[in-house]
Image 1 (cartoon, one colour):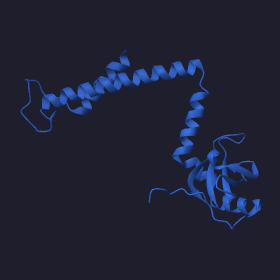
Image 2 (tube, rainbow, N blue to C red; image 1 turned 60 degrees about the vertical axis):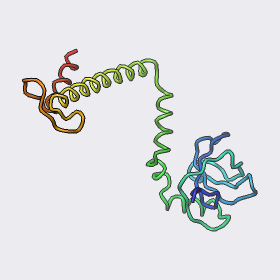
Image 3 (cartoon, one colour; image 1 turned 90 degrees about the vertical axis):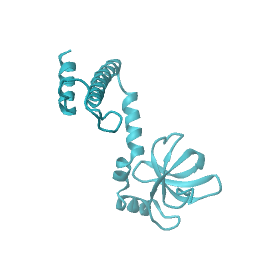
Image 4 (cartoon, one colour; image 1 turned 135 degrees about the vertical axis):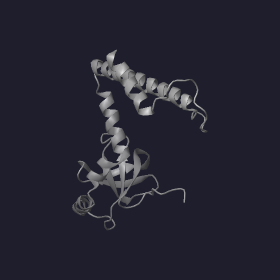
Length: 170
């Protein structure tokens, strides 16, 4: 089945536009083809109508009777522990990361760039060292062959430790 998120009573959605952008709401009733009645009991979104093109449907759904009051919606929202489930979701984590990135100062962005550069140098040096060790072992292309050269091949762990020491000294 291609679609799994339907516009239905109890479906949780994220408001994508308007004054309540980014808040969670529950669909209480379908008004017509383009509008629904929503309620956000714990997200301070009052009961009201909203266009479907202003909503992003989530995978979460709560059970309550048709056209239930705000009190009933709140009770089932809390019983389903929806706020915690939302915080655990990948979608919410991405939104939080985006907000955090937008709040960075110039100094924070500079520190982040320096940290990434250092991490990438360590990663590249480790990769090259492991590749060299695999080439010496003859395991670079899958099959074990005779080792090249006369020196004793290093294990991957030893090679990695040496690379990290070299980069740390710089």
